[in-house]
Structure formats: C-alpha cells, structure tokens
Length: 179
Image 1 (cartoon, rainbow, N blue to C red):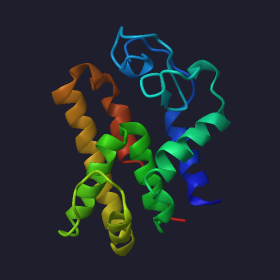
Image 2: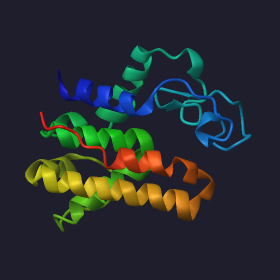
Image 3: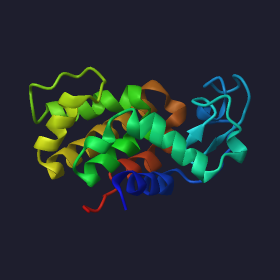
C-alpha cells in the first residue's frame, strides 16, 4: 500500500460519513452558521470548503480524488520518506486546512532546525528538512502543535467549538504505526 492510500485510509477513519449539523460552521456554504446553504460534510469534505459540490451524494472515490489533488499533491507529501510523518501531515492538512496546518508543520520543524523559514509553503526546503530529522521527534512535535492549535481554537478564538475539543485532542495524539 503506498503512502497516499495509507494516509487516505487513516484520515477517512478520523472523518467518517455524512453529517449535517446546523451548529457546525463547516456545513454551511458560506463558512458561517446560517450563511449560505446547509449542505453538510461528508468524508471530511465540507460545504464551506467546497460550496459547489453535492456533499450528500459525494462518493468515497470522489473524496479520495479531492484529497489527492488538493491536499496530498499540492503539499508535496509524496516526497516525504517517512509514512508516519506524511500521514500525520496529511491528517493535519485535511482537518485544519493548509493555511493553518502548513505553518504549524514548519514551526514544529523549526524547533529542531533553526534554518527553516515559516512561510506556509511545504516546498523542497521544508521536505528536505523533514526527511533529514528524526521522525519520532518530529511526530511528537506535530502532535503537540496540533493539540495546542485545537485547544487555542476552541477556548480562545471560538468557544462554540469547545464541544469538538475532546475529539480533536484524541485526533491530535492518535498514534500512527511506522511502516
């Protein structure tokens, strides 16, 4: 099984099927509660991110293609040699979005390597650095970065999201088996 297939299987295990909770801002095409159309989220593909998709009838195959194009390929995750790290980065990207996840990934790396520039772009320099550092250390730092992000998001920036905190923290610290 290649790294993308492993990562997709892992993420789908975290994301689950169709939900249409009106209290979840991701389920609205406008990205805010009551803004746009309530279309829901399926396999982690949200109406807020993909307002023109028929979310309810999205197939697993379609979700896989979206994830491959918009998250895996776009962020060069295929160039990461550690399957454990590529899966963790992919999970962060899917759940947080690249605008939040990429700087967090780079900040985790920066704590081990001062030369990395935190620019939100997972390009060749970031990939080379990921591939040159200890995967267990980096994995632990990615867990911590994720945990702090979720805690801050739900307790400081948007307290209405606190109902998701336990699940998010479980996700942040979920172990991935080395392959």
